[in-house]
Structure formats: structure tokens, C-alpha cells
Amino acid sequence: DPLVDPVAGSDELAFEGALRPTSLAEFVGQPKVRGQLEVLLRAATIQERTPDHILLAGPPGLGKTTLAMIIGAETGRPIRFSSGPAIQHAGDLAAVLSALVPGEVLFVDEIHRMARSAEEMLYLAMEDFKIDIMVGKGAGAASIPLELAPFTLVGATTRSGMLPAPLRDRFGFTAHLEHYAAADLERVLSRSARLMDVALEPAALGELARRSRGTPRIANRLLRRVRDWLLVHEGSSDLDGVRAALELYDVDEAGLDRIDRAVLEAIAHRFGGGPVGLSTLAATVGEEADTIEAVVEPFLVREGLIGRTPRGRIATPAGLRHAGVVTQDATLD
Ligand code: ADP
Image (cartoon, rainbow, N blue to C red; front, top):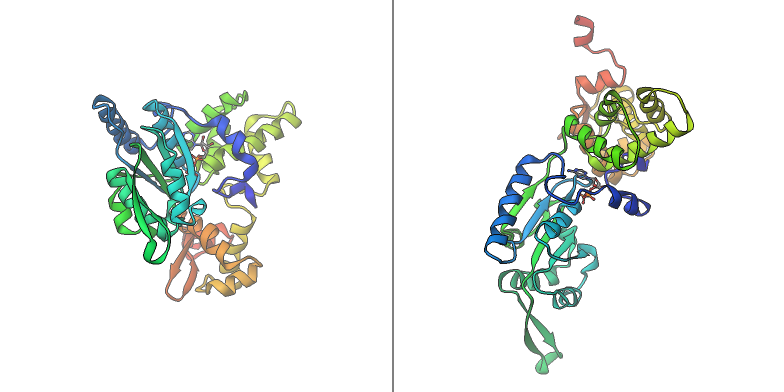
């Protein structure tokens, strides 16, 4: 179900682009990261140099691409987009780097997926703004040094642990983005609602924020569905609109979708609260084990609904309650 997928669909780019904040001041939440970036960018501007290379680490949908664009905008520099999967050979990277104009911001999304052969080239480029290009083969091979325009690399990664240490160390600053508190998501939503020309009452925004899994991308996506619902059901209250639209699209009051609930309910009911192994669980709910491990479980674990143990997945007391199992706590009170 794409509605609560933190990764953007290809049809969403225009919609998302229209909602992107364009300055640090407009960027909601993440006060620590905002404060850190502000100092870093101001200092570079005062000294009239390119800002240090910046690594943006954190789960999808929390604003890494947005921040990269803000870094360009705040320093008045152009930005060029690339991504780890697009850099499969050192030559791919050489082509990108040699085309940079002085001071440009180079954004490399999913930088942990870049080819190993390109990484070595990137080390030298980040340190000295130069690369060595290999020409020819065998005995006639030669390396030709090439000076690059000074640039700022902004790397984004959902897996900072997968970056090799030498690459991680070459970033002057790493920003760690965290999931958003409901109050911050409410601010994201109220800003988006204004841009989309829908006025939602605070209670409706609060309800939407609580169901958005701490993720601005999901909040904006749910808002779009609610806007449609309210358009079609003229005269109903905003809060009813949120509740009815999200029920229609199978997003429950804690932000769980159909698959999340299927996983939680399987652990709670079919396996008596667990532990149960991943592959058994996957077969039971009819989903790929990879999807469950990468998309479903991190959220359920973060919400304290399930736990991972060496013997398998278990439902926590909160998870059992969410799945409608009456736990001992509940019988006591
Ligand atoms: P990422 O690159 O981390 O996957 P994006 O930067 O593409 O995430 O953000 C996804 C969507 O969420 C965009 O539409 C963006 O406008 C919105 N968004 C993300 N962070 C914020 C924020 N702090 N304030 C307002 N909107 C945000």
C-alpha cells in the first residue's frame, strides 16, 4: 500500500516539489539540524568559500532532498542532482564532477549505493578538488590529473552505517534527521494545507499528524487524500473527513495500514504473541520477507508494538492491545 510508504512514488514529484520549503526558516522541526546548518552556511558565506561537505542521514521522507535544495538556496549556489545507483562506474562520477561549475552544490541521493570504484575517486575530489582519470590499458595506461571546480558535496543516506568510514570521515558535518513529533507534523500539515488552499481546523490537523508515522512525506500524502474526500463530501466536518478518508484508505488511528495490522495480528493471534521467525511471518501474511523487514517492522518496532528477539518477532503488551488481545495489564485495571 503506497499510502504509508515513506519513499516517494514517481508520480509524486511535482506534488512534493510544490510543498518543499525553500529556506531554513521555513523548514519545520529538526531544530538541532537547522541550527547546525545555519552556522555552517553563514560561516562559509562570511569567508566567501564553499561550505564543507555535508552528509544528511536518516529515514526516507524526513526532508533530506529538501535540505539539500535549501543549502543551495541559502548560499545562492546552483545545485546538481545525482544518485548512488546512477554512479555505477568511476567514469560516471568523473563525468558529473568535471561538469560542475565553481561553487556548485552536488547532491548525491542514496550515496551508500554508489559503486566502490567511484568511491576512491570521490575521496580525492572531496579533499583536493581534483581527480585522476585513467586512460588507455595495460602497459600504455596513464593517469591524467584533472582539476575540478570547488564544490560542496551533499550526500543523503538512509543507511549511514553502510558508508565506508573513509567516505564518512570526509564529510565536514553529518546531520542526523529524526522522525518528527506530532506537533511538528501539525505545523508541516498546516503549511501544506495553506499552499494547497484547503483550510483544516486544528483538531483535524492534529488527528492527521498523529497518523502520519512521524514522516512529513506521509503527512502530505494523507492530506491530499483528505482534501479529496472533503471535496466530494461537501458540508462534513474536517475531523470527520480525516477519520472517514483514512478509514477508506485503511490507515488506522495509530497510522498502521493493512499490512502493518496483518503482521501485528498474525504475531498476536496466530502465534500467541510470538516469537515467530521472519520467513514464517512473511508466508502467513503473504508478503515478501524483505518488505516486512525493511518497511513494516521498523515502524512497528519504533511504535513499541513489536520487538525483535534472537528467537523471532514478538508482540509487546501495547502491540497485543492494538491487535485486540486482552492482556494481563488490561484485566487488572
Ligand atoms: P527525503 O529526501 O528525506 O526522502 P524530502 O526532502 O523529499 O525527503 O521530503 C519529502 C516531502 O516532505 C517533501 O514534499 C517536503 O516538502 C516535505 N518535508 C520534509 N521535511 C519537511 C519539513 N521539515 N518541513 C516541511 N516540509 C517537509
